[in-house]
Picture (tube, rainbow, N blue to C red):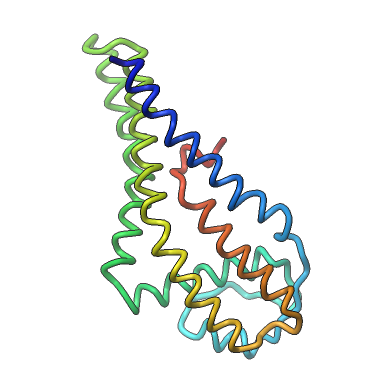
Length: 187
């Protein structure tokens, strides 16, 4: 039984890690260090109500992308609070459930209720479940980023359209990187 649960659990973890690498880490490695030049007054109009770090007009695309993603999340919370809360709940689930299941499994091993392999499988299954929930709720966050990206394109904050595209791609890549549970981000 433990082997079957392990085999079923490894598939979503492998898919989540592969998607994170393909759509997230690979894009950030390719475009993240690209220097971008921005008109800060237009940039501030797009990110009007969002708390933001101080950014220079000349910064790497990954910095602007992260700010765009955070602004999209704040604007999304105002537009559709129920859906944004659902995404945040799936993120918190991925943060809390795998370590909690690991603690429960360790206690069960100590009390001799399950074997050690069972404890490992329980932790992997909880991580797989958190990965699935993260991937299933990612689409709504990507739509929120697309809405903010559309506003960014209309504002013409970047002098070159290549810089604008790089920032948008970095914001999307950052969302893909954040979708897996923190336990898997260490890999």
